[in-house]
Structures are given as structure tokens and as C-alpha cells.
Image (cartoon, rainbow, N blue to C red; front, side, top):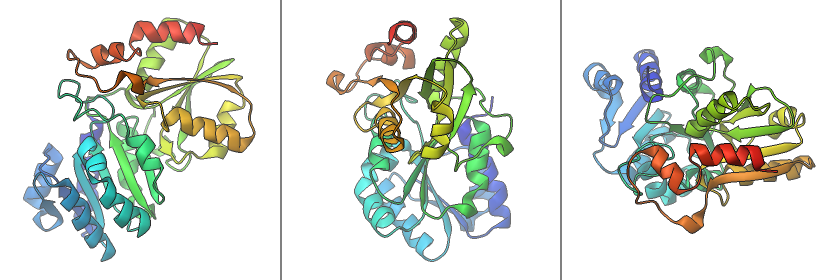
Length: 306
């Protein structure tokens, strides 16, 4: 199964062969598609080494001169390690670059908390002129690449490291401006999630024969009118996120419901900051269990949340 990363960079490679203004900056990261860049398009590829902050500055300088720049590194280092640079160059000055981070959530489960990414949605959505795309599958990854000419501000493209399932049938089914998709239609309760936990939610709903709806929320800031079309059919929402709860996905949903004047009960499930950072090893599910969002915990929460 092709990963989101490979689907994205394969598409950017093909686009860059035509559009010579596309520049890729890698902070010492590799993939087969990037190997093709190094070989075939050396004038459009820069390896900065392990220097993510410098990568953001170089990218912003090139973008200011009209280049379409994609910066690539492990997501935790490319966002949190660079947040002041992103805030000034891309938030304040609104210089549009494409920040492509691999390793959302606990994509690097055995690399420890330095590689775990539990704060990015909260932090990036707090900065003006930043759009976060939490990529769901390879089709959305392709769409995020193909739409590069339409981007007016900085895009934070959040990639899962491991191969994932598929939500969309093709890239033509993806609307990045819509930002939300009802994956399963149900009654009463709607589960809203993204990334790895979206697929876990889908598995639980199907295995337990729950008459729940399931929604993929993949764009921040939230398109409130698009969200309203879906949530108005339900009277309860479970927000499930692989990030710390304060200011994350659940908070964004509550803000949107308040702005829309919708009175819908919301249960937020995610990472309790009281648990701190996780030094447990043994894979992603072991980390989920540590934080109380393992599969058995979620089955119980889904059935008894309200």
C-alpha cells in the first residue's frame, strides 16, 4: 500500500518537471520520490541538513521571490522547533510556503516523546495565515499536491508515516476547501476524528454495529458552513483526537458550534495533558492505551459517552 508521503512526493515530482518554479527543501529527509528530485531536478532541490529553522527561512526567502516552495521534515521538528520562524515569516508577513511534515500524532511510536506530535493542530491553528491539512489517505495527498497553485497562504500538510486505508475513491472526490467529509451516515451520535484515529473509529463502529455517523475533519480553520451541513443531522458528537485536548480538534469543534449557534452535546476524547508525555514503548496501540484511547477504552466510551 502506497503511503501518503510517497503519493504526495510522486505527484510533486511530476508537477515539478513542468513547473520549474517548484522548489523542494529537505531537512535531511529521504524517500524514493526525493531521490528522483536529487537525480533529475537538482536545480529544484535543496538539502539543508538537520536544520529545520533554517529550512523555513530559506523557503520563505525563495517564496518571496515567487517560487512555490515545499519544506519537508519530521513534523514535530518542522513545526514546534520552528514555530517562532513560522509565526513571523508566514503568519505576520504572510509569505506562503508549504510545510510538509511526516509523522503526525504517534506515527513514530518507538522514537519517544521528542518525535510524538501532540500539540501541532492547537498551535498552528492559533497563527493567522496558516491552513492545516491533516491528510486522510493517498488520494487527499495527491489532491494537496495538485492544488498547489491555488494556495494563497501557508499550508501545513500533515502526513501519516505508516500506510493507511482509504477514505476517498480518487483525488477528484476531495475538496480541500470543504475540509470535512461524512464517511459513515448514522443516527443520533456522530464521531468526528482525523488521521490514524479516524480509521480506528471506523473499525470500531463497523465491528460493534453501532448506528453512529463518522466524520473526517481534515482542515483547520474549520469550514463552519460545511461542518454545519453534517452535524445538524445529529444531537450528539464525540470528538476523538490523537493530540492534547486543550485547543485541539475538540476545542475547534466547540468554537465552531458556538459560532453557528448550534446546541449539540460534545464529548471530547483525546490526550489528557495531566498524563504528560509518554515514555511507554511497544507501538502505537500501547501509547493509546497509556492515554486511555486504546481500542477497548474507545469501545466503552462510544457506548457509554452520554
